[in-house]
Image (cartoon, rainbow, N blue to C red; front, side, top):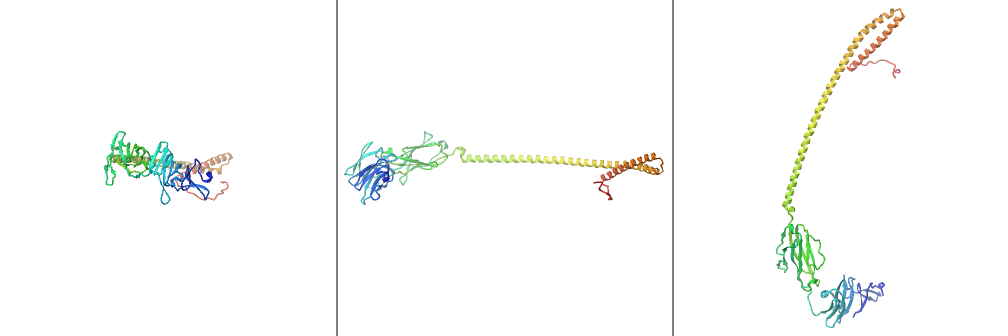
Amino acid sequence: FGTEDGLPQGRLSAFHTSLYPVFTSSEGLFRFDGISRKFIPDITFGRRLADGSQEIVMLAEDSRGNIWTSSFEGGTSYLNASYRQINGGYFYQRTPFQRIPSTGIWTIFPEDDDIVWFGGEEGLFRYDRRNRKNYAVDFPALVRRVIAGGDSVIYGGAALDHPTGRREQPFAPRWSYTYNTLRFEYAASSFEYPSANQYQVLLEGFDKDWSNWTEETQKDYTNLSEGEYIFRVRAQNVYQHLSEEGRFRFSILPPWYRTWWAYALYSALGLGILMTLIRYRERTLRARTVELERAVSARTDDLKQEKRKTEEQAEELKALSNLKSRFFANISHEFRTPLTLILGQIDSVLPDLKKERNIQRLQMAHRNAVQLQRLINQLLDLSKFDAQQMKLHAVEQNIVPLL
């Protein structure tokens, strides 16, 4: 038979019981199923023995049909008892054997009078089932001391009896932020094999969940913030019975720079600074406004002066233009009158001249006088145009030579 038949890998051992053969393995108990012709996990003696969480190393049956096993789970050795019930079932139990050292049990020998012997690396152990014992006796976990800063004991374990039977802390102390490094020392009032007691702690206001189980009897916290806290501790004894919680309520005051009056001072200072900034901003804006107004006023004055100068220059240019026009008009009139007289005389004598040479000279003088008269007329027209007195006259003209 092998893994293809349902058996796990590793060491296998066969044991005979009054019901059928049982096989121990690294994954618990197995039995052979005649129908499927396979090995299957055997839950008859307790599901914990067949769920794969334990390696079963030894098995024995006593005269009453009770099954005794030794196993390893998570590297720890355990003893297990499966007690035969009247209805034919089994009741699984591990609690009575928790005091036996967890280094491994390799021999189990049941006697006929409810006595079982266990042999292991730490020696030989005798269990008498007839000695009935309550393994669920309640017990409290206690906060014994609270030490601040490594040397100042601020709580020495004093407590008051509560009507419910619990021990209550008489008051919730408050201390300064200077003492924000704390050590909590605790214990459990279960004195049977006390070195096996294990503890879990939780500091409400700091921790999110319970710590792992450990045999440590103290817990350190450093640099705690201001606020209200509850230190909680619970224990389980050698029989894995859970204790009543021990609690210690306390408060840490904020440092002076995080007190309400400090925040009020910060608010006042902030408000003062804000008001100062606002006033400074207002003064700056007013100064800029005044400066801008001055600049605008100065620029306006400059523009007015420039406009006035421009107007004065325009008047001067207009006066000069008028003077020029009058000058040209006067000069033109002064030229035109003598020219008219000269032309008149030339025109009167030209018809009577006999000599060709004299005629040519007079004709040349006449042409020059006419040309000069034309120029003078143009100057007069220009003067009229400048004085906006020029009148247009329509005439018929061939425009081809002008194109």
